[in-house]
Length: 119
Image (cartoon, rainbow, N blue to C red; front, side):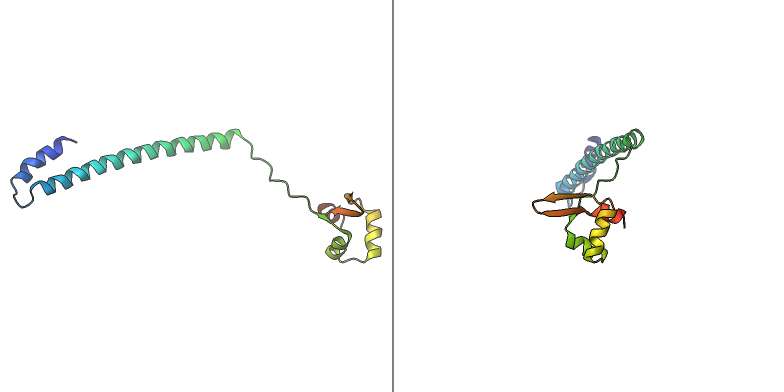
C-alpha cells in the first residue's frame, strides 16, 4: 500500500494546482480504508466465533423449562369474586376440592392455580 502514494506523488507533483493537498487526501483515504478493512475482518472473525458458539449451545444443551410462574395467593373474598360463587358454595368447594391453602395470622390464603385446577 505504501507504494501507491509514492507513484501518485510524481504525477501529482507535476500538477501545480493540486499540489500536496491532493496527496494528503489520497494518503488519508488509503489509511482510513486500510483501518476499515482490518476492523471489518476482526468483526467477521468475531461473528464466526459467535455463530460457532451458538451452534454448540444449540446442539449440546437442552432448552430450560419455562420459568415457573409466581405463586399467587388469594383471600376468601378474592376466590369468591374470581369464581363468582357465594359464601356457602365457597365453603362447600373448600371441603370438597383439594385447594392448597396456608394460614397467615388469622386469615387463610388459597393458591390461585389450585383453585382453578379444581374448577
